[in-house]
Length: 453
Image (cartoon, rainbow, N blue to C red; front, side):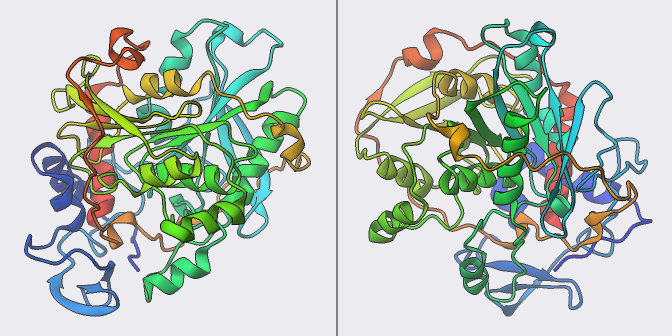
């Protein structure tokens, strides 16, 4: 419901967001409403009236400054200057060292694009490599994810036998269709809220098919993994659910599964999508409401046929900023392969953490999806954008902040070890090159500024 207008500075909103990122919990940053408000419903800001609506009913709470009238859709850098905005087919923030691919895609049959990075260690080789599809957060760009997730730096730090290709796709209107093929159900549950219903299941499936079957892409069909931050993490859950036959596993940060059922409905959902056993590695902060629930862990564990778990304390690798958590709790299913794991960062909020790339890759790298190439469709073929100036970001985006998630109480783990688990702490994962603290904080500020909108 929020429309961003160009020609005005984003600096005020960024300033507020940066302060919130440093000093407040993500609960206050995401909601920006009085602490006494019951947050069990769906919230959306009505620009025309300037008030929050809960489940379609107008509340007494104003949307606040910096939401629509003061929001500059084009964004701003830390000097207050405007930055070019990404579109479904263009991202001015991407360096010339990455390779751009495009296919015809939803919703209008025009170009949908992504950018890939092949590490120098394998650039001149011919061997097939794993690929991580790394998705940006809602309101963000592919270049933002490249600069904050840590996967590029990690891939560059590994040897030829260990490294991987990274692909950063761009969401249409800077959003992802996290409701997958269940958008009608999602729309019905969200009332007047405009659910972003672009068919990204088809886009991401075509991305994988093109990268596997195009002559020079070098991607191993059996080792394709999904990742992302925030809304990109939610999309990772969704593509892993609906296309488990082409995804070898997923690991993502600061997000949860959308439209994941429970009980008997969970069984029916598994049958509907023929969900295959899925390695899943979920990371996020204990103060992040978009992560602080256990439905996703329980759902994937159930689909993998496991109801047992164990938890242990973890000492995290060196922080790249002063505000990053130093300890975490790792909860894992204990029924054998494939495992489901959840790494909860003590006090962590809704911000990227480049350290998670190493933990995620250490978990995922041994898994394969047999039969994935046969399950893929034909190569959709390369496509050249009809007009580089076409800006799909003018479509009104549905921001994550319009819905306040219901927090599910965390179930006490079966056992809690006081020593650091061997799977994570005794062998320190290869640490990616640290993202410049200013850049990481700035990205968090941009994400929160968008959440305030």
